[in-house]
Length: 115
Image 1 (cartoon, helix red, strand yellow):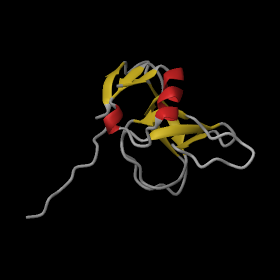
Image 2 (tube, one colour):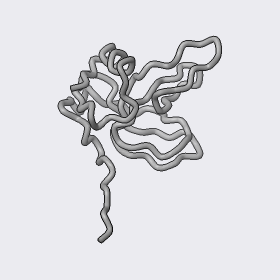
Image 3 (cartoon, helix red, strand yellow):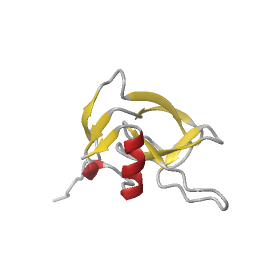
Image 4 (cartoon, one colour):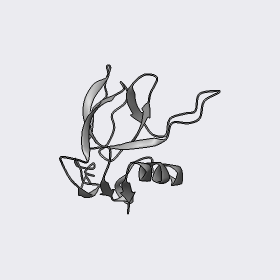
């Protein structure tokens, strides 16, 4: 018998949000496929979001977590608009990808509470 594992569904990580206040359409950098619940960091230089954690660039501080990807995304060869939780939300920590203590603290700045 083959065992199938279902990937995280869109917004499965959400405990509480206000659809009109908590989410935004953001620009996600080209890159690999990402699951729903992937933490994202904002790169102000390139003006797009990247999967968190982002490898630090010499001479610069690492980019902090700033949002949570709403739905799974396929591999992208170009930047793409996506929906992300950017503020005023409670999320389930066990369903987030990339969560660490620094990310949890950084998300609190945006009023995203990890439970």
